[in-house]
Image (cartoon, rainbow, N blue to C red):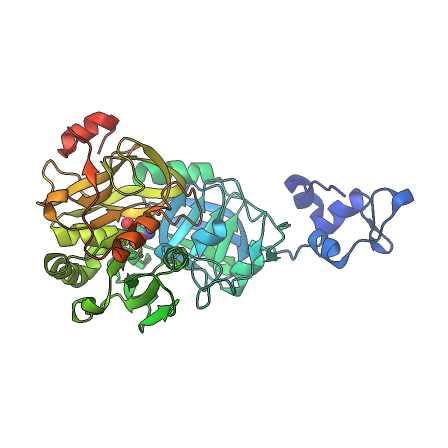
Length: 460
Ligand SMILES: NC(=O)CC[C@H](N)C(=O)O
């Protein structure tokens, strides 16, 4: 049975009225449209046709810059403050919302309909010790959706986006013009905001001092593991330590899948005191400003100077590597969030070929500064094809080190798997102990930021 739920029809008549008008609700409840072939509906079909509706509660998104957008609430019913950011991803709202790097952020989806495949159960037996999604709960502070899907359909779904957000007290707003909000954020940059729900919508907007600024907090300390733990303890692969700044589960899965024994350490762990029992170090993604954890960057600097085993950093981990190497990090206007960001490789290393463009998944507000002179022993690895921001750094062959950092997410979840083999490269390097460095630079592009900008023709 195919039923199209017209938003306008539902608004006008309510869902029950809408079904009635389609002849789907008779005296005995929901029936088939064709009385001659009236096949009783299964419980699952009936459940899908009778979604749990959010109560009609007003909601307003207030921005510190003075704009307010009124709509309806779904999910949690408590007002929340956060940093308002937008993501251009079309799929994987469950993966994004459980990514710890979104902590403190009100996430605006540019894709107009969100929620249509529901939410799966977060428990998994495939990778013991890890959730099915990217962490054990929703991490963003709130969500902004043009048109939330109340009816969902997916073989793994167990609840709707509304029910999931309600369980975690994460407020959502729907029925707002997300194109207008996105254009504004793109022009003025990521902006502090409040999702006001229910009675709070009748109060005046918060004063500037009332807005909570997550970038002033050490958010990493809130999401990192409090104690070390090991995954895949009987694995045959190398022993890899992960400094956990708020790691996405798919990073850990990607290492475990390659049979590495993975020990996850708290963000402020003194890695140098245990480093000799590991074959490689991984630096994870994480929320907030990398400059909040300069002590960790100092620890990593010592590791780089005194240790010759492979190190790989993703997103926050890449920014920490850059700070450790003496580079600067800056706050971008609106960052890059989405699963469709093209990056150009400037060096070949393992599975990555210089001169190729890879489509990547991204979620960041900060980036390493592109300069004419990279610190000694370092070169750019990737550059963003849209805005020429630094997308990766790599130790030079002359440095004798085997270290890479990438701003994007090779593990995706969600997003394209173009660069997933970087995990195989890293595990192989760790396995090979002191194997010869295999990376090479593109002749003529061995850095000089200006030259690179000319290659991609963008602005920094
Ligand atoms: N995904 C990440 O690790 C993000 C890193 C950092 N919080 C940023 O916004 O730039």
